[in-house]
Length: 375
Image (tube, rainbow, N blue to C red):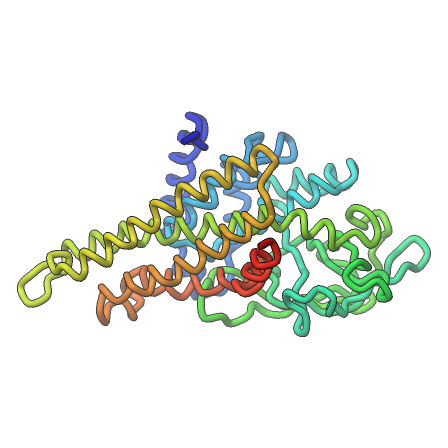
């Protein structure tokens, strides 16, 4: 089995773990209550090379996808799924890097690497989730501008975002083939944001609605070719889905370790929780399934680094990892008894935070459809 991580990746992992321990965990509960992560954290993360880790300098931290994986995994393993670095670094920035003009890269990527500009991607609408043909946001050419009108919802990093990649319809007659991507900066007249949305999990993650009321977007903010948005999305979704799968696996691995410690220390009827055979079997099953999942995901990450991750395999990774996460975390929470449902232990937050991973980036049902069509 080929190894995904080199020595520099391992050194970076130590650095990321220190950053999380020192700069995130002591304040995370405050951000959960506030419903937003402060911009100051993003600048601190930029200074430490945690943003745009896979892009070359000055557009990123001069690493590769292995460095991005380290950030994804360590945040998830520390039970910090509400930190939106992955959307910023592993979705928005690659769109700019792969599709942007040199001027667009120079304009936004260095600022995103430093944390001065926070990125979001706006595709989902109140009436259009996975069905992109139902997109109602319109962008109409008017001289040197496009006039953008519409509404987006469930936008991760939306409250903090200084730059949003917006999916809009530019040719309604073409359906899904008439979609385009636009780089829309915070502060443009007609561009407004709703308050942070109340969610059942990932409370520290600032998720909101975005509104575009005849926003004039300069034509040089078109990202890539006109009417090519659907093709671009289809290509980039493999990375997004693998990133979600890696988050799901690392989150579950982290909670398994915490649950092992809890069951060793907690006694019920005079015996440690782990001394009951049924409970050991729950932990054993979780360990066995996660070990098998880890081998698969590491292979997927290597394939992505080599440029040959198949979209169907990426869909399998997301489906397996997120469904397994939900099942295992539910079983682990049960071992805590009533404490699992309290805020005293992290398992409850992990359980609630995990639920979204089976929805965004394409629901489990969409993953099954993608896989099914390939059979």
